[in-house]
Length: 518
Image (cartoon, rainbow, N blue to C red; front, top):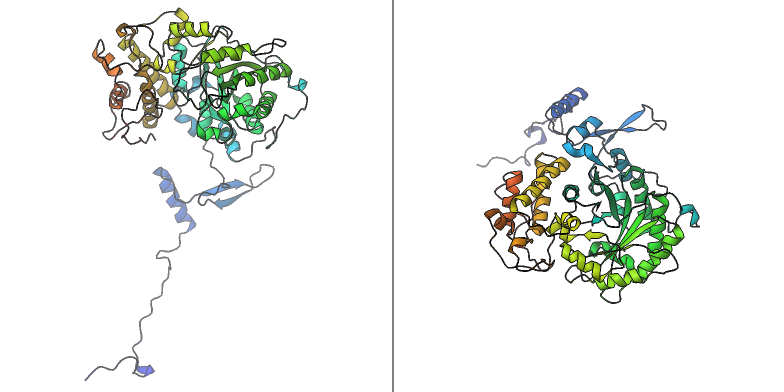
């Protein structure tokens, strides 16, 4: 006999199910204000930030104490940014930061990020606020490049510790790495860090890249107010597609009216002179530098003395990059093509200077140019090159002396980036990037003929001692070994791939994974 189902049973005889009443639908009692405060205090004591924070936003127009609570959510760009107290920001600063100038204050960077900085240059402006040239005439600190050794801007490897090393070995003028004006105007701390200057740098300039006059003028406002610079260089030679596709870098050589606008709006805000850095042209033909230098000469005459200090001409086109020899004969043509009726601008050539013999040869090829030795890759391969140029000799430097140079860089790097794990990692990264150039040097005492040329790739050789042989290795694992001599042991899974690769120097470790530098 089967049991009756619940459906067939009378309603009054059905078994009643036990009801469960949830006192707390979320599975936990609601958190009281006191419990929440105790929880946050406990997290703060453990140095752990809660997932969701509450911000205090000042709502009073006069800056009073009236405040309201607001919850931060997601990536809302309008959300208030917490400003750490001054003592928290300076407690962990690197030891050498007191010797660095040209630092933009944190509150200014914060105002730039929040679009609250009050620029004098209007967004979208295409010309200076004054229509006539005379108001742009102002007293400017003159910069004399004659007879000097100038270290050109070098992306990634031209950092402040590297420039300190070059200054120690005789560099008279240094320039910071190229900084993008849109990033500066957005308050990016990493971009503003490129403009820092050490007190050892006797004459210092910054190089800015912009595609529009208002971008350049706004960046120059902040640089002139908070920076410690002697000149501002307009980049018209960067061959990187990311820069050129937006109208900056070498793309400016085909837009003379745009260059005039950028020049005027920069000079309106700056109290220091400007310089122009360009290549021979966009392609090998037609060459454009002589035309652009003629425009620059006329503009400098209109805007007054001291407005444009000089023009730098890299003897390669944008498409040539660094694969061909620099055309110094054309650099001489650029210097000769200026108008004799108005004051001429100094034309400074750049490219393939790696020894004093190279410098003498370039001077004979281009005698009409300024006698300023502008160094780039030559200074990366031979950081003691300024000493050779000043003393007019070839220096057969020993391996131990070269290691001392690297030891100086490590010390300067820890002063600049800090001696914690993050600072050591960054210092090691830039040291390894530099070693990817340093290994190309062949000791003078081992050469059959002098000098070593920039694009020469000598056969592998055995040095006069083990250290010299190690420094000549093109294997990135040996570069890591050198870094361990100065900065300690690296993790077991550490690997390095150089960022910059030359056509004549293939990367030794192309399969290595990029390293997370923190």
